[in-house]
Length: 340
Image (tube, rainbow, N blue to C red):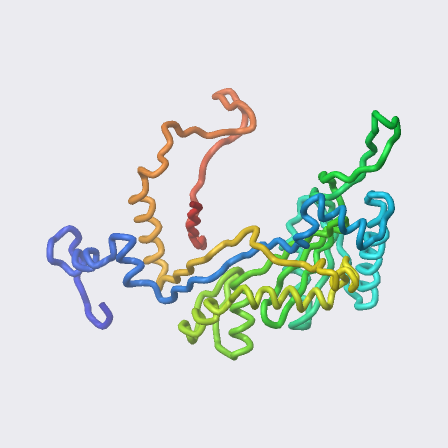
């Protein structure tokens, strides 16, 4: 109560202290109704398959080798020159454009590497770096089979899995911000596109010169919230497809022009989509009340029958060392994640 001297008498009904306590929101609904200063619904992270559909079944792979590669023997040796040419094109592309190729180390998060290099990247549009990693994926391989009637051996192609090199093109796009396009270096050269809806929104706000305060993965405040929501709503399948086509024209491509003209072109499908609802509260106390009420109102959801501490070894009274649990709240921003 600004500008007023108030004598506080705890516990007495009708005092200013008791009245102020009664006015504090006591339910999740009240907090969200009265104390949210920014609410934003958007796509968060999208992970998309980028594949040539005709090559995902064995018959289509055999047809490609027979018709496009004019192979007399149905064997994956017919596409080995494509693999070599694709890898050489990536290395030449990196050299000509002075783009670093980084081998991803085991145990280090790729996003951390990307964030460090992006912070030093001076352009709004271009390839930041190329990452290289060995990963398991679906490929075609040739195996030898035996014809019992003719007592002869012949080659045959089967679908299998293998650990092979993948190339991550981490790029900054003038419309989408940071994203990556990952290619498998082996036939049928499947790829994946990963983008972030919040990065898209930030790029659009910058382009339209709308002031905002950014979070690592989100937006905390904006001078024009309605326009921000409209930007997020406008992120469409056509815009995502246009992003892919733009960068397929600029990056090394595993399929030469004659294959693309024959219909062997990449198409997009959704592998994983994460949607985000951002609600920014007016002050920290509202956030604390929100989290306390969420916990209190949902204690009976998924309550375990038994709770125990689990260590990587047996712990008894005779075990040397100190074991304790600490809860530290100073300087901590709470976060609630719900997975359905």
